[in-house]
Amino acid sequence: MSFLVKQLGLVDYASTYEAMQVFTKDRNSQTLDEIWVLEHLPVFTLGLAGDASNLHSPSSQIPLVQVDRGGEITYHGPGQIVIYLLLDLKRLGIFVKELVSRIEQALIDTLADFGIAAERHAGAPGIYVAEQAGVTQEWVGAKIAALGLKVSKSCSYHGLALNVATDLEAFKRIHPCGYEGLKTIDMQTLGIKDNIETISQRLLEHLQKQLMPS
Image (cartoon, rainbow, N blue to C red):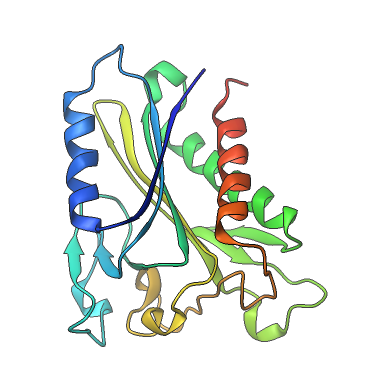
């Protein structure tokens, strides 16, 4: 199974969101699956289940965009790896729940490559820092990666976001994923100095491995 990988760089959220919708609407059974790797200009996004009041400290510099993915509110900005998975799930033979699990595993494996132990939390989509040597108790349980998916006509779009060297102050303006007091962390704060391109490539490799037929 092959994927067309597109490296889009630093891009505006709204235009990218629209492009994903158009791609999914226009694709057919012969359309090659695509993986878009990028960073976004600062933006808050609110999912279908989202409560706008979870943006408790709005910023005139950071727009809020209502989107059709699942989940609550999150922040995207420079220094965060965003990967959108535009996949024909029926053709891949993957159900949504399994896709979420595979994305989570790719994130866990990527973080492990850089010496960070991470884990799932039941009922709270995303990836969280696990207890481990060298990490202060303050950051145990902090969220380091987010997921948000939408499936239309058995095809997925949206995807995941991994905090590498992100503006953590922006997360303080929201209740991340609707959880008041949930801490958000990035790899840089945990001592990882590798550049975002290196980490992005490793994450892409793990994702492609997870998406291969088992």
